[in-house]
Image 1 (cartoon, rainbow, N blue to C red):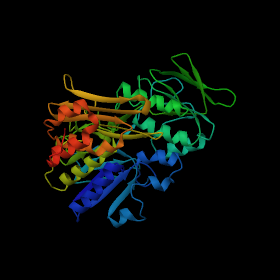
Image 2 (tube, rainbow, N blue to C red; image 1 turned 90 degrees about the horizontal axis):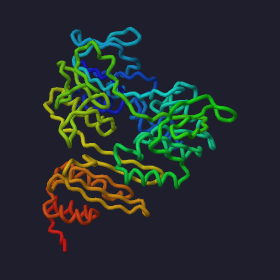
Image 3 (cartoon, helix red, strand yellow; image 1 turned 45 degrees about the vertical axis):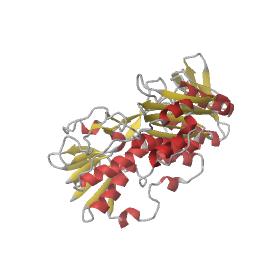
Amino acid sequence: MRHVIIGAGPAGVIAAETLRKADPASQITLIGDEPEPPYSRMALPYYLSDNIKEEGTYLRKTDGYYAAQRIDIVQDKVEQVRPNDKRLRLKDGADVDFDRLLIAAGARPISPPISGIDLPGVHPCWTLHDARQIVQLATPGAHVVLMGAGFIGCIILEALVKRGVQLSVVEMENRMVPRMMNQTSGGLIKAWCQEKGVNVYTSTKVESIEKGNGDHSLSVNLDNGKTLPASLIIAATGVKSNIEFLGDTGIDTDVGILVNHHLQTNVADIYAAGDVAQGKDFSTGDYSVQAIQPTAADHGRVAALNMAGQNIEHQGSVNMNVLATLGLISSSFGLWMGEPGSDHTELTEPNRYRYLSLQFRDDTLIGASSLGLTQHVGVLRGLIQSKTKLGSWKAKLMKDPTRIMEAYVASTQALGVNVQ
């Protein structure tokens, strides 16, 4: 059996490893379009902050690891997929035949339609090549503008602060990390960053970028009338699934590749995983692109087992994010924003930068978000993923959401906790 995987990120690597275990006699080819060994994009901020060297970003760090696993690595770009012929065409002109194909081609940064976005000194932070350029420009004292305060943006923010730059963050939404925090908790993260010396502009857009003067090569014009000097601008304004090369294949796509509950496309023997796949959401049952590394890993494993002939249903990925922003830990799980008409409760302690929100469907926890409360992280995910019925504990949590650990123990292990 010839298994071919397009994409050498976490989904692709985990799929290759899973296939080697599930189908020991198979031929496995992993195709990535970057010159480095397979690496984790989520590790790039650690490289930016000098916590690790480039090799520290590699997904597998043992020399000769892939050869020992009999996984062939091809460093080239797939330009064409021909499902009827079961063949790929690479950029260098070579063909690669497959029996079963996994498309784990990932995503790419979205370049916002802003005048000057292509000027030298404006970079995304998506590849090792990007990170190398940022390291050269993000020197101590340099003026840096970060466009976007989402999950990826906030990880980059921390690395930049550690590099000693003078940082300004511009976010068009009314709060930081708007896809995992509400206005209260996202506002607290903003206040925390400002207290640490970061300039944060929310509800603000970059109107244009121009060449600068003097010590600063760039000027950033904001819609609030301000102009920010910069030696470096980093665009962290979202990503888009890499599906364009599939245009004439007959593979169904929407914002990502459409898959069923086995992560199989509408074309026999072709599967999809990770940031490129429109997979099942555990909480809603809908199919969406969930561009986070835990989902990529989950997809890669399930898709590979099905490619190997097993009948494994993907139960859906739990939306989960855990983020450290200059020492302040935030997290969100499942339907953290709740459902229309559902019950919810929250604890807010702004002076301590603490926040906790619980969202319920009847007596089941369906979503949660927290700030500055790390001890609850595992319990929140566990209760949501297990769909545990809380019974009388729901009313107690509505009064005091910090009792979530007691509720977990009582509901899952029936220990008879005294709740007086």
